[in-house]
Every structure is written in structure tokens, then in C-alpha cells.
Length: 255
Ligand code: CIR
Image 1 (tube, helix red, strand yellow):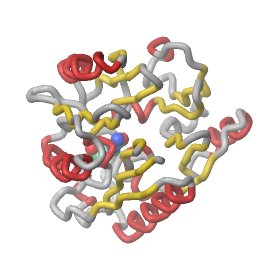
Image 2 (cartoon, helix red, strand yellow):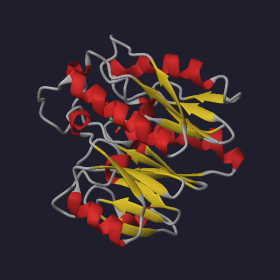
Image 3 (tube, rainbow, N blue to C red):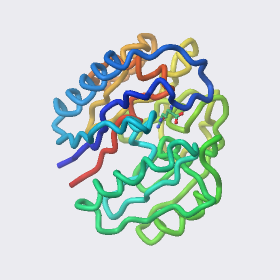
Image 4 (spheres, rainbow, N blue to C red):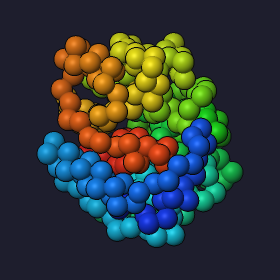
């Protein structure tokens, strides 16, 4: 059985961090409604959803993915790259404690956001972005090597996180924007490229054989349909104004 940890959209999301996007007004009620739709999609796909209460003082706290990497054997609590997001991990540590007895913590001054961590089987790819650094990759390598994981640093350019550029959409297939991350980094996989007019289209949440995918990218969606990837679509454009995509809004793991 799988569980998804989510967190209600903060009323202060209008003060979110932005790196590659210009600030535009965010309708909190609409963002919450889209977030509910996302949680419903998770439940529809058979996940238990542990929905944490809103954190009014933490604008970006809906993006729980950035706070941890949860594997079958253990979890790594990140040290988010943006100062304003550091304390988001506190409630996540408490929420994960019942599910994982072994929690590793990234130590300062290393920084890493979960959005930069892509697990494909025993390969763990970590984006070197404005939020994540090689020190964090080295720490994760030390934590996770004993469990048989292999860490790979991947240079990311033009977007916030590695998972803005590439995510897994089938056991052996990655959805990628090759302008933001080089395909040569990834071992033993096939690729579906995003339509070049939809650069933000590479972010999908894979649950079993199905993906949760935003409605905003019809051309790339056609490519996924053609490849036979089953999907549930959600509207996520209000959350996208905060530079968040669909993977960002949950921490999914086996219980
Ligand atoms: C930030 O800049 O940190 C947030 N506004 C967006 C984080 C999105 N998270 C993700 O892609 N994993």
C-alpha cells in the first residue's frame, strides 16, 4: 500500500519563492480547489492521503516534495535551498516518524530540494540547480550506498529543479525536456520528449502504471497518449504560478 503526504495550500502562498517566473497574482481559493482535485486523483489511484494542515507562515509549504526523499528502507530529510523554506522539514519529520525508523538529515551547509531528486529504481539522480549542491549529493551517497543505491549528479539549466526537466512516466521511460537536462545522464531508459512549445510539460507523478498529469500541456499529452501511458489529468495552473508542478505537492511512499 502507498501513502501520499500532502499539505494544504498556505494562505501566504502569494509570497512564495520565485526563480524563473515573474510574480503574478495567485487566487488562494482556486489554488486550494486545484489542490483538492489533486488529492482526489491520488485517492482515486488507491493511495491513502495524509493531508497536513496549512502552515500560514510558510508560503511554499504545499510543496512537500522538497522536504524529503522517502525510500522503502529509510528517508532523507533535506535541507531546502531557499532560506524561507528551511523550517518546512520540521512537521515532515514528525509525519514520517511513524513510517520510517531510519531518518537521515542533510547537514549544513549542504542544500538540496526534493524536487531535484529523481529516483529510478536503484539510481538516484540529483539536480545541481540553484537549490541543490554537490555536498548534498555526497551526503546522500554516504547515507544510501549501504542500501544499494547509486547517486548521480545532473546539471540542470533553465528551470528550478531536475524534476521540472525530467520525471518517470513508465518503468523504463522518462519524460524529458532535453534543453534543461541532458539525456546522456540517465542510464538504461527510453525517453519521451516534451513538445518544444511546452517546456514545463516534463513533470508527471507516476503511481503504479498511471500518471497524474496537468491539463496545461495538450501537445505533450498527445505524445504520452500515443505511447500508451494511462493518465488522470488535473488542473494545476494556479499552483504553477508559484513555480510548483504536480510532483511537488506530495511525498509518496510504500507503507
Ligand atoms: C519554490 O520556489 O521553492 C516554490 N515556489 C516552488 C517549489 C516547487 N517544488 C518542486 O518543484 N518540487
